Length: 298
Picture 1 (cartoon, rainbow, N blue to C red):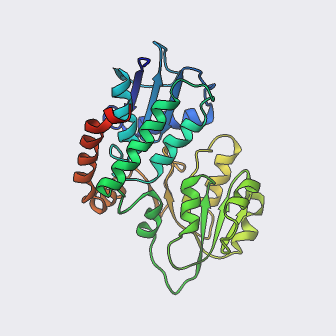
Picture 2: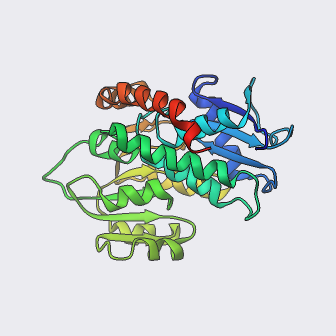
């Protein structure tokens, strides 16, 4: 077994704002694929696993924590993929993010076996302890948007990733149509095919798709550089926009217009903590179970 070194920064070592900024930077300028390492980055963590004493790719981190050994790396990856170390205990997106990070590895990559074992162990832990969040990121619009049942509105979802698609597939009640704005609509149209109430557009077609009706905005994208950031800002602050839920790792709208809430606002974090309070013990049990059972998969 090859030794593994990993370097990490998460919400136990850095502020959410610092992690979000680093994640956003990596999304804008992703490093070249490595033949010896895996880079895992989300808005809550940045981790670098390598089979040699290799420096992680250049990103801004104020201090780093590190560990050494294949077993330690496997335990940590499994605990992450299970959602047992997440801000939302049992979140469903992190398992897919670990899986997608693994899918970008080259076929002969030396970490394939470790990632596979970690994902298998994480799946078992989630099922064993029922570790599935009561309220996940895509559920926040259901909770945070005001209810105006007498006023039919449209929901604008900015982005085309897994989070944006989950919101479009299950929007809050009271919306007669969901409009998804993205820079690359062709692939997204195929992904949402069959969702009859969803329209996918680029920015130039947005006003026509919204049809002059009031709308609420969910921003769930990592693409906020160049002119697109201005287009997102214009869409979210338009005259018919009623309120905004910003799920980006760094605020898409630093000016915070009326009706704006960011993922890391104290009241939003409080909603998440209270809704998922029952998951805390399950997450701890899952972490301990993974650490005890990891040897059988190595």
